Each structure stands twice: as structure tokens, then as C-alpha cells.
Amino acid sequence: MPKTHTTVGIIGGGPAGLLLARLLHNSGIDCVLLESRDRAYVEQRQRAGILEQGTVDALRESGAAERLDREGLVHDGIELRWNRRAHRIDFPALTGGRRVWVYAQTEIVKDLIALQLTYGAPLLFEAAVHAVEGADTEEPLIRYTHEGRDKTLTCDYVVGCDGFHGVARTAIPDGVKRTYEHAYPYSWLGILADVPPSCDELIYAHSPRGFALHSMRSPTVSRLYLQVPNGTDPANWSDERIWDELEARFAVDGDWKLRRGPVTAKSVLPMRSSVTEPMRYGRVFLAGDAAHIVPPTGAKGLNLAAADVIVLARAFARLKDTGSAELLDAYSDTCLRRVWRAEHFSYFMTTALHTDPGQSPFATRLQLSRLDRIAASPHAAAELAENYAGLPTV
Ligand code: RFL
Ligand code: PHB
Image (cartoon, rainbow, N blue to C red):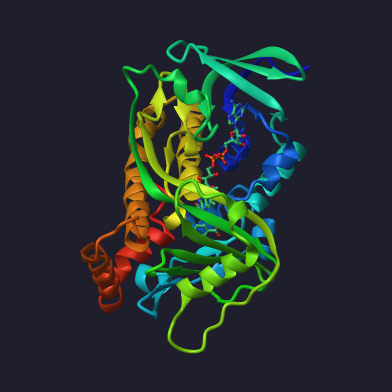
């Protein structure tokens, strides 16, 4: 018989909801997590690949990094390419020792689900929330459907970790909520390929044919992305066409070669920026993609989601230990400072490296000048490195 009351009701079992449940469990705070999809779907959804130092530190502290420490790939930099030239950004040298990890979101989600089901609070799959009521009362209520039945869960607090298309945001009245948005005039075609990566570190390429990114999932699996027009149907992109286009966009002087292999997944994703303020109304909090979206060029989405719930879990622990709601009251402002920094960085990385449809030659020369500046000045490079490798959590 599922619980009908909990201290913290969490909506959404993506990285934000799962990490929050883990952190609350470690602080002895009761919670229930409701996820609309089934376990296999959540564990296989292809998304992020890059973890900042702060995200890795939090996963370690929460006891969820055993496999990450074994299988994660530590990266000390990225490569930028433009005008057939390559320039490496050295993170530890430019940031006082910070680095990033390549470890897929799918794997973090699997690790956190396994821990939650073994040790943690209730985690219900196929539990679709359709309403959050009473945000401004002492006991907000979640309405959801599970095993064909309508159910309710009363909570001391509700946290919406239900992503960009979730319902929790609707608990903030329209007169209070403000959403800031930007849509980009291009999308990404992403592939997974059974071939060892052609590079040791990620490559972000500006080219006259559009942006390309070479990432990876493991020493034997590559993840690559191409800028494509909005509305692109992946079915119109044969494997050969994708590899030809990637090769053209990564072209560089010297003897670098792109390895080709069987493509195992192909999808198109739109690029957007969005922030909803405030991230808290009464006893309902928003965390992760439920509150903000960034285009993936800066690799910030998952890391922002983790940073939100780290701040929130600390605030709930403070409330439990001392009775002080000071950190909870500061939650939205604390997170939004970091969110807007990441929004700006993601916008910068996106607009510096992509080509707008019909972009003027003048705009292209400005982009190239910006990239030349990063190569010429350690200060300009450090600005990129600090943002990419991640600012401290709070
Ligand atoms: P998620 O992962 O979207 O999880 C939300 C969960 O809520 C569930 N849900 C509901 N459950 C119950 N009732 C409802 N009514 C519900 N509505 C929704 C959903 O089923 C889902 O399980 O949000 P969360 O947890 O905030 O995590 C955010 C990250 O997933 C996202 O920001 C990143 O994936 C973004 N991102 C990247 N971030 C990085 O930090 N580094 C990267 O390298 C990176 N690469 C990427 C990315 C996102 C991508 N896509 C597909 C948008 C690469 C890609 C291709
Ligand atoms: C990925 O590996 O999926 C990835 C890496 C870096 C990005 C975006 C996506 O900026």
C-alpha cells in the first residue's frame, strides 16, 4: 500500500529527482519519488555525457560514484576547431585544477535507481502526476495515477523535478511566474556509433558548413552531433551522409582522421534556452529542467540540475537539524545566480560555434575573431574553461 503522506514529494525520476532522493535519504529525510515512465525507458534515454567536478564530488559524497570512479573518463580539456586549425583548452592549468568527467547520464540514472530501490525511499515507476495543488498551504497535494488508479500524496513540501514538459511548474500562478525564453534557428542530429573515439578529448568545431561535436561514451563508443536545420527528419540522413558531413566539418590541417563505424542510434533535438522564475512558490520547489533549459553546447543541463538539488537538499537538512528555513527561503535566488551564468555560457558557446541560416559574412568574421581571441589570450581561454569545467556549487 503506497504511502499517502511524506515530508518531501518528488515528481520526476531523472537525474535531479533521483539525486535529490538520495541526498534526502542520507540526511534521514522522508520522501517519495513518482516517475511517469517505466524503469527501462528512464534508464535508456540518451542525453548528457559531461559531468563537472562539483557534480562528481556530490555523487561521491552521496555514495553513488562507485562505478563512475571505475568507468568514468577524466578529461583535462576540450579542443576547439575553426578555419582548419585546432586549439586545446587546458582546464586544470586555466582553472586551478578543475576537470570534467565523461560518464553518461544513462549510467548515473541506472546507478541512482539501483541505490534507491535497495536502500532508499519509495520510488514508483509508471506513476504519472497530473496535478499539484495547495502550493501556498501547509500541506500541498500531488494527484497521480498508478496501476490504473487515481491516488493522492500529501506532502510537507513538493519538489518538481519533472523536466521541461512537467506539470509542477503549473503550481506557480501565472501572475507570479515569469518565463524567459530563446529559440535557436537550428537543431542537432545526434548519433551513437560503435567505434572508438577519434580523439582523446571532445572536439567542438566551427565550420562554414555548420557546427559539429565529437564526444564519446566509452573507449569503444563514440557520440557525435551535427548542426542541422530545424524540422530535419533523421530518416533523410543515411549513415554515409552523416559520416561525410562530420568529416567535412572536422577537417583540420595535419593528419587527423575520423574513424567511421556502425551507427546504433540517431535522433534530432531542438535547441532552446528557458528560465522560469521564481524556482519556488509556497511549499513547491522546481529543480533541473523543470525550471530551466539550456542548449547542450555548454554541457550544462545535467550539471545545473545536480547543483539545484544539492542546494535544496542542504536547505532541507538545515531545516530538519536547526528548524531554520533560511536556506530554503534563499533557494530560488541562490540557484538563479548560477542558472543565469550557465544560460549565458550556453548561449555564448552555441552562438559562437553555430552558423545561423543566412548568416552574413560579417557575423562569421566576428565569430572567427572571437575564437582567435580564445587561442591568443589565456584570459579569454580561462573564461571559457572556468565556465565549462564548472563554477563551485554554491
Ligand atoms: P529530466 O531528465 O528531463 O527528468 C525529468 C523526469 O520527470 C519525468 N516526468 C514525470 N514524472 C511524473 N509525472 C509527470 N507528470 C512527469 N513529467 C515528467 C520524466 O519522465 C523524467 O524522467 O530532467 P532533470 O532530472 O532535471 O535532468 C536534466 C537533464 O536530463 C538535462 O538537463 C540534460 O540531459 C541536458 N544535457 C546535457 N547536460 C549536461 O550537463 N551535459 C551534457 O553533456 C548534456 N548533453 C543534454 C545533453 C541534453 C540532451 N537532450 C536530449 C536534450 C545532450 C542532449 C542530446
Ligand atoms: C554528449 O556527450 O552527449 C555531450 C557532450 C558535450 C556537450 C553536449 C553533449 O556539450
